[in-house]
Image 1 (cartoon, rainbow, N blue to C red):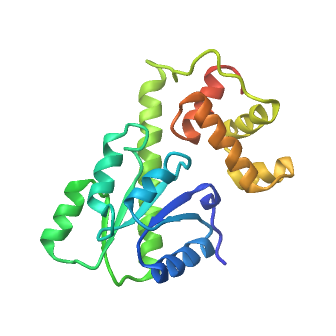
Image 2: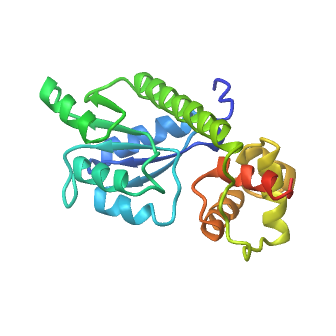
Length: 215
């Protein structure tokens, strides 16, 4: 397997009503080093987003209960989720379909069937772009505003250690190794801290730790 760099920190949400595609794409992405959670339609995905905080979403367009367009429109309304990059997968490849998908709020529109290597390249590109935007926003707002977290927030000693390691730039896998626990345990701590603080992602957690002199 090739070197995956920091991919171990990237969690992807894959949404599709085709179980065969879910299985194949999930296996391939996990082989490449990503963590993948799945949903069968937009409605189920919205429920998952109440608990999970993916770095990127890969979404089919035509699905029962809630299709891709309705799903993306919903998350683009939520400031806690609107920043998440979305890659649309669709069997419809006409220009009008692509335009509608991008206008709905998708960042990338891919037509089925597609090469797995191309999907991975699009995932990596979208994640890098999101990281650059987040870094830019952090730099431009650092001097004028601070992360707004209630003063009553209290972290457990374990959570404090995790957030300190986050502030040092370590990924989930590296933190898990340093603390001799599973990567899933670290992800659970990160998720709990996001819930406690009301922050949106790992970057904001790390910044908050530095601004409050935890780090």
